[in-house]
Image 1: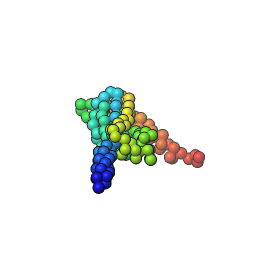
Image 2: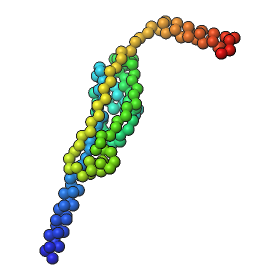
Image 3: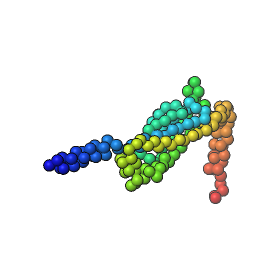
Length: 150
């Protein structure tokens, strides 16, 4: 009977150790901009001002929108919209991910860094914009009413 009891205790200890030492993978996405302080939206959700970190669960393509405004709320830099693919590392591809997520007894950090250089927005005077639009409209009108068939 003591042999059975010692095996039972050993089995319980091994099971407790196995379940108590589960691994974990922490996935983060770091977004940096030059200049810093731009608002960052990931999948149409504001996550903060750059540089910013966010944790995520699933790999794949993310829609990232970055915009930097001045004190009056006007866009100071061109708005950037990027579809960035966040690919899994080798240890997060099936079936290896079963071991890295469950068996490995330590926390694994998987950090993806994306950097963006923002372009200063060019302000065109309203008169110039109006003149250019009228000119383009006239050209389109001439093409539409031309008698030539192309």
